Image (cartoon, rainbow, N blue to C red; front, side, top):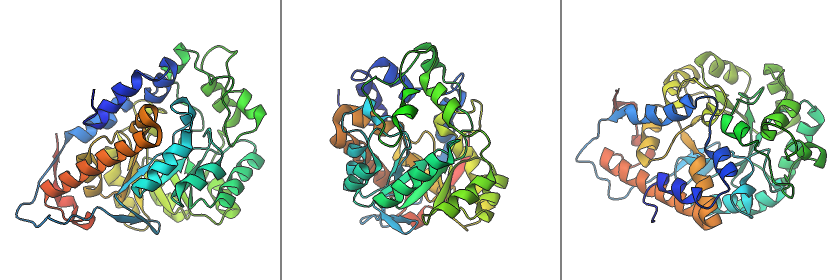
Length: 359
């Protein structure tokens, strides 16, 4: 089977991955309503293309927080990439550098941040979960700074982990021999087998700080010289407060449908947040992006770039660095075609009037 769209990569990866790893990557919380709605909401949007526009020489490039990107697509943070390929996050970072975009590395990565940074050619952000032990969080930030990471992305929608029933049914745990590059051995032991239910959920319940508040955003900013983006904003009032709190950017995100099941789709939440921010800081969005035309829709509704997640894991499982590169290349080709057919020779031409209506 040849992959001709991003969804094809998922079926190819299913055949290669351990069933528990596949369900961990693919699954969502509860009934997976929000997981499905992220896609459905994007598919409800229709566009009004322009005609008789010169699109012979398209420019897909953009700039986010001072970094030039070959296209307005960034790779989202995703944990435990060693389940997909031995090179794990190193392969993903290298493929992102090849493609001229940014890789956002998870706190729960298998590879150490220094090794991932070495493969990223400076195109690396670091996603941070705030742990109860602030010393552990501080150490992660310091390691990211030493490695040359360009920005921190604080996840703000996970005071606890959403109940992911696929993982509970399989009593999902990491292999005994698998190591996480940025956690201590004691922290990692919570993720291994030997208990009922999901060890991922057990780890989060023990490590994550359910008291996380706006005061902790200020604490983090005082601890680092790096710009701090907040990932998980889904309301206009929270977006306005993020700007006031000094956030460098916002990622509109419902955690890929993996936290609150029944939460609004990210593309539906985006316009309210863009209006509240009013251009003061960049607004990014993730959740269900699988097509070049999806990227056009998000940019027309005010996002500066989108973050893509699961398809990157499918590409990694299929072919490591080359597989991730194939996913990014296919999405770039689709974006180029969508912009051409919409009459948009560059990113600035993707304006709100392109959006016709929601069905």
